[in-house]
Length: 265
Image (cartoon, rainbow, N blue to C red; front, side, top):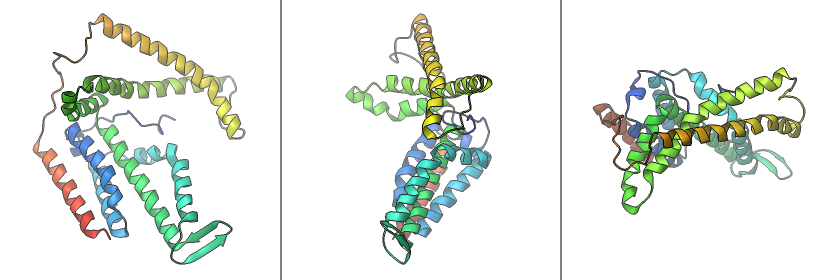
């Protein structure tokens, strides 16, 4: 379970990707998710795949972490791909039965949708694995800072996200402990049909929610005891600094985007 749920986890390292400014990584990740929708043929998806796997190699993180990040979403991905395969028409018809038709365009669209899911998940996972949660929230606050002019509570939003990211791994560890305790009492989470398996989850959710509310109350009391009054007038311990490597990263991403625009049909 812990290997599959990687959201909020950070793997310490000294790679080129780890050393990038978190604002750079967050911006490129967001732009990548937008740019990926420009791809519409084999060449453009090849460029995106080459860019993604090159970045993964630069991070020096084992590939198993990225493969594991896809496992929780494998059913959603499979369902979406099958919809594309069975209900997209065009080209040579390979199989037809009732409302289900497998065509040349359907298979191609199914492959493209799978690649799109895979690349987005890999890049998003790379962001969280190479960026400490607190640095990530600092980057979000810095990028949203112009919204303060229209009275958007940027600091409060960043604080909530920071707390959420910080406690995701903690909640996962807590869930694992509860599951182990339930297994020692004879509960098998893998047997029965899907409804029986969902019912077996209830003994995990109840103590997990109770533990979460207790942690939230303890955190609120601790912040109040330390005189927390919001972001006004506060200084920062972690100062975000722009380096030449950040400019290089943006230049490479811009080059990839230009190639996508040129090669898209």
